[in-house]
Length: 324
Image (cartoon, rainbow, N blue to C red; front, side):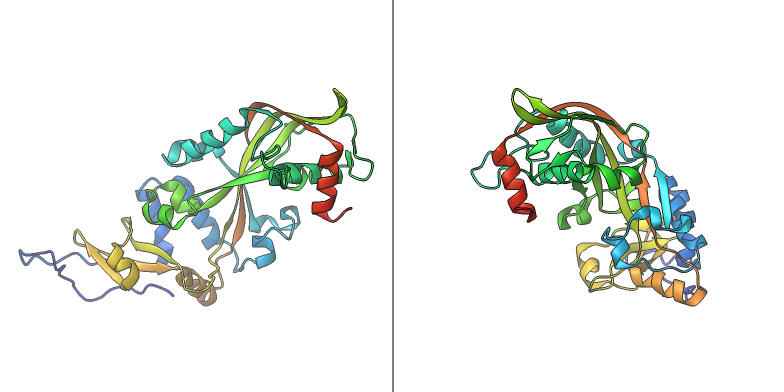
């Protein structure tokens, strides 16, 4: 949907002095400039990339990660979103990152992110299962022989796309709950990514055939990065993206959120409803607007993680992966 210029004058209900509110024309291609006005530098950059690209709707297989990112053309990739920007541009992100890094700073055997779980069932965490699968695919772990090869892996020069394909083993979500979406501060990170995923990779890892009689995995450094999709795909209802003017964006009140009026007037400014459908209609009409994958730079943290693998652990891995 192209948001057409408004030609009639408006007088907000809250206005009592009879003064007429200013009217300005607005279209969704004005949003990057509105982001500039709010100093949302990365948000404006990403949206301008979308508007500049040839029309392209992201296939669901790409969105879900079933197609490798390095097979995509450059127009469908952005690979240099600064990770440090996440920590400085939004007050909500740093505490979440620090919480997860703290859980991985020092691990001996047990960890819900990368070790065993303290439960009699499914002892291997999902993160450890994925890490073992990564090592198996690298030819370092043999589940049939229940062995690891001695090897030191240093991926300090890998970018996010390479880590994604090699040694990423876990992830955590930011801003994904209904409450977070309704209450998170509207800032540059929100404008660029909304809710998103931070992935965890082992960037320095030592596989050991025997440590005190057990195969062992030691991780000395982890790398965090963002993998996100910049797209306007709808699942079910047309997703509301806020109410925009040339000066910025406002979040609708709870009443407005459910009613979804076509515009909201605040402080003598008319803000227009923008949805995923607005961008899809623009793309269809102008044959411009290309969805793309977003990867950040890598943020590396030193850690001390050691997990020993017993014969029972190898057997559990084989059973859960169907390799038994």
